[in-house]
Length: 439
Image (cartoon, rainbow, N blue to C red; front, side, top):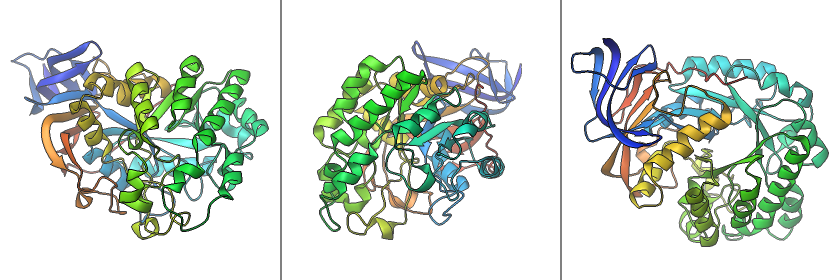
């Protein structure tokens, strides 16, 4: 048999565990897991000593296009993702203009098809004005779902009241993704703080009840309407323990940042570069996030990659924008967590491949299986390396993990059978495709 690509001798992560396999790839799909010694290919990669994971995904990124090319674009963001071992990303709608109408959707489809290095999907932002169009917009090619900012947004993308949230849920049928902080409590508590106070006040302003109240309201409306919900960047012990009994209607995302950073230490060390929404919290909530990874409450781990000009991040608290870079560092960080015993490689494949495929409706992604897309992340679990700012591909040019040493590193990124990154080098040209989702 002649293949386009053969991956041989790698330790593959299957649903049932680890197993050596020789994978034959043709026309962007997995054709065989039992390639023989007499089979040939246009390209052969010897993955001896490497683990082969189903292509890892980051379902929560902000690539700022259309908007501010000085901090990120689809091309630079997907390049960073590929260098970090990711094969698929989903881009958020708070661009300028917002991705909330058919014209912007079509622009983004064209732009991603021309400039993305990897598989690309994107969200539609819900507004009061586009509610009746959401069912149509969510069915457009490349659209991974609807994003609702029930708190912490500006302009038309803010949908904070129950009546408007319910209307969003009544239009369309796919799972809706929520930033679930309670805007009313946020605005009321903001009066207690002022510019220039210590950065650690960010987690005091946006306290546990802001998040928990927002999540409780969303789930109540999800039950009322029957529309399944995906709670993004969950951060608190209260939410995670409460969501245990709501898994029939809700899926749960936790960020790598909240699995890696702990307050108030991170604010003392990083200042404004640690400011994000929802905030980095203390040890109690960090421990709760990891417990939710272990007990299965967490379905998805993402980065919430949100680049900003570093000169703006250095401003005093309440003047600095919220958000951290993370699309290029999420895989090394999570591999390091595997090596430190916090989760297994199989569980990592669950939360960054299989579960995203299930939740968002990608029937040919998320597993190493015959007939599935040939998306792979090849990693060296023994490789030690230091994350540095000069490795970061984003024009913003910084990472909150500068000088952090990790063990475990992405070595090869394969997208639809095409080797996009190998040993820190980008290969070829951007030829990524829009993801096909179930209707």
